[in-house]
Length: 386
Image 1: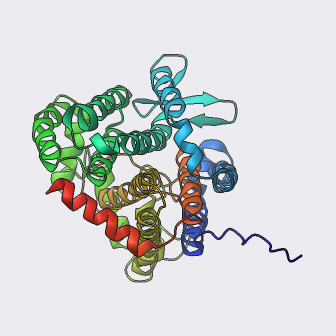
Image 2: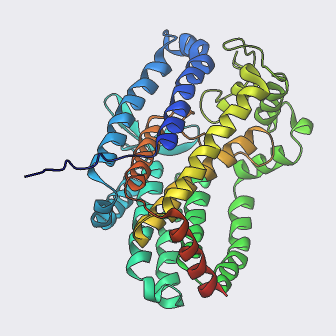
């Protein structure tokens, strides 16, 4: 009797290599950008690198677990993940539980590490939206079932994030809502109308906050405020501009010498531009392009609607954060406080994003007929939104 062995599960090799390359680049640049600061503040030049290495190690485990468990099981966890996220977002606001740093209460500290609930919220929000929209597939175009409940729930998450305050994560949560609602076939008039209604609220949220107005002022004319509110943006532009084509050399950047604040976190892109130059920046952008390209392709080839929405949502997190972070560093957007995916220093962000990459890789092992699936999804979206 002839026996046949099961075909090995194949994950997308380009996506896996691009993610690991970004993580490796991030580890190198975190050390380069933080060594002097760590020596001055902690007495150990490897302080931030050690913590990032620990997060990367945990991220590899999270990625492997996600690939092993599979994306389908996330549908069962949609509500539990959302409820846990809401609890964490409330807990972080309680004095004594949430930790304040830089004027924002965004972390819950545990022995040896800190948890940032807003980072978990991004992942949980995508999982819940994907599950809910797939379940309501036949009624997603209706206002009372497909649009309003998701909008109200998003409002709760945004309100909790704004209390920290975390404007960048709030904008991302809204962006994810609109991306997935559009992908699911919500009427375009609902989306456009809600944006028009939200503009006055966004203006009030910015105008009523002195620190947000300072960020807008720095964005509009950083050089006129070179020594106050525009200092960070101006230093970032100087850092990127001084890199030229090939950069000053790895480890030879000058702006990290206590000139550019948050050099290893929000503004690590500026250090990459300074030390690795246009060549290094081009490589970085190319790696993100590969991740986004493969993520979208995998999503459109998913065998189930839930998988399509899940893949698009997770890919959108990476694409949005990468684009916003790089634009902020180049003075093209006001400062938002979003990390550069897989590269910036930040344990929770790295762990969650590597877990998300694991979900995409799991999805890639179950995708067949990418072209047919993409054509069908595109046709459905055009029919509903027409």
